[in-house]
Amino acid sequence: MTTNAAPPTSGTDRFLAAELAGEASFLIARARSRGSALANDRLAPLGLRVRSYSVLSLACSGLRPTQRELAEFLSLDPSQIVALVDALEKDGQVQRIPDPSDRRSKLIEATPSGAALYARARALTCEAEDVSLGGLSATEKTEFLELLNKAAFPIG
Image (tube, rainbow, N blue to C red):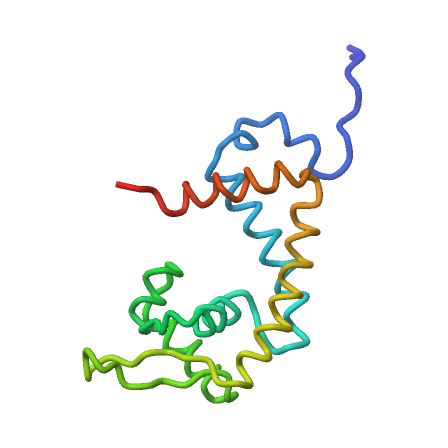
């Protein structure tokens, strides 16, 4: 028996018709994976990865997060945060300082070296984001980021 069906396209394009390609959890995970890979490639020369960059970014924010707050906000296990802060502290990028409101807790702050590293890293992550979201118009990118924010930080 012969068929007139066109041969499948190369690569992953043939899977776009699968139900999975329309599921939010899959699409979010795929977009995250692509974006993280691009950012990690750009950050590698600085000795950073997306997770360490995230900790450094929050340390540079002026918000003086605790390790517990970092773990909660970044959705990471506290032991992962300890390892990330330890590595950044060892490299002289952040410091732990006593929390005046809770002596058992430490606040994470960037050092001047960490702030300089963050500025360079931020430019690189912006480049990676531009590539990752390159298929979107400026308006679509703004809307996409607003919708992601709503999904990541639901109210109520």
